[in-house]
Length: 361
Picture 1 (spheres, one colour):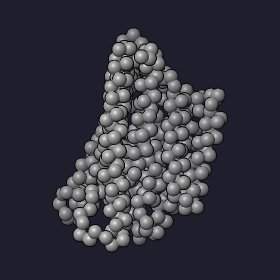
Picture 2: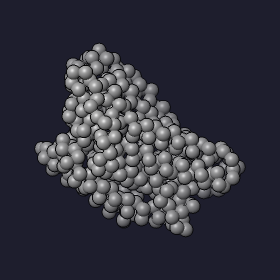
Picture 3: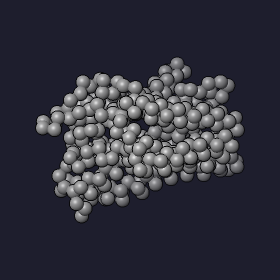
Picture 4: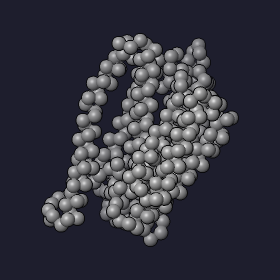
C-alpha cells in the first residue's frame, strides 16, 4: 500500500482526472445550452432542435464525475472541502441552482404543457442555466487559485469576506474561458450529430468564432493572472515545463481551428478534446502542490493514512462497476441509436419504435 503522502497525491490526481472527464462530457452538454442561446438566422430553429435532441438521458449521468470530486474532497481533504463551501458558498450555490434548473427545465419542456409559450419559456431557462453553471464553476476555480482565500493555521477558520474573494477580474475571466471551452466542445460534438450540410456549415462558423474566443479568453486570463493569481502565473510562465506546455497547447489550438476551417470534423473533434485536456493539465500542474493557494497543500490538508488507503481501495472497486455501466449506457444511447438512424435512412424497419434520444457525445 502507498505511503500517506503518495496516497494523497494519487487521490488529488484522481480528482483532476474526474474534473477533466466532467468537462469533456457534462461540460459539452452545458455548451449545448449555450449554442441554443446564440442560435440565430434561418437555421436557428433546426439548430436548437438538434441541440435538444442530442441531449438525452445520459447527460444526467455525467454529473457522477462532479459527485466523485465532491465526495473525494469531503472524505480525503475535509479542511479543503470546508474552506471551499464556506468562502465560496455564493458561486457554489449558483452552480447547484443552475444544475437543478437545467434538469427541471429539460424535463418540463418535454413532458409539461404542450403549448408553445410554455415550451419556449422552459427552453430559455434551460439555456440560461446552461450558461450560468459553467460560468460560476470557472469563477470558483479562479478564486481557488487567486490566493485570496486564507485559512487560519491554528483554528482552521476561513479568513475571507465571501464576496471579494471571487468578485475579481481573474476569476470571471476563468469563468468566461470555461463557458467558451464548453461551447467549443459542444459544437465539435454536434458536427457529428447531423448530416445536414446547412447545419454543419452553421456549426462550423460558430466553432471558428468560439475557438478564437477561447484563445482570447485564455490570453485574458493569463494576463490577469499576473496580479490575480501570481502562483498560477508563475507556474504557467516560468516553470521548467511551461515552455513545452505552451507550445503543445498552442499547437493543438491552432490545429483545431485549421481542421474546422478545412471541414475536417473528425480531426477537429480529436484536437479540441486534446486542447481541453492540455488546459486542465496546465492548471493542475501550476497549482501543484496546493489545493487552495497559499495555505492548503495536498500534504497539510489530507485525511489520515488509513482513510486515504481505504478510499483508494473503494475507488478501484468502483471503477470496475462504473466503467462497464458507462460503456453500456453509451451503447444504448449512442451506438444503438446510430444503427437505428442508419436503418431508417435506408428505408428499413418501417414502424419500429425509436430508441431514446442520445447524448451529444
